[in-house]
Image (cartoon, rainbow, N blue to C red; front, side, top):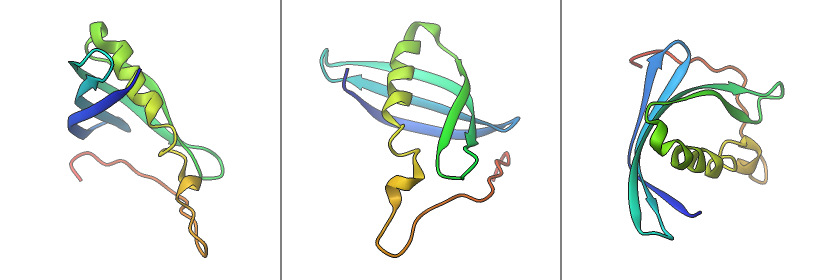
Length: 100
């Protein structure tokens, strides 16, 4: 399934969670579904990869489309993919603060 996200809204609702709402376009069927979810991000021990856990789907009917969007983000959540010749991107410490 090929998905494209439009009208993406990213929030920090508290409790160390992220919130995500988006309109998902499914290329194969040319349909659009609205998804909404919250989840807890975490870093691996080396600070190289962001994992998304404890996903709560706000609309169970479109949960499969929300999961397809999350699956498509795995490459950009691996910070090693942002390496340049003389430098690399790594998160040493992360803090999610509501309203900031």
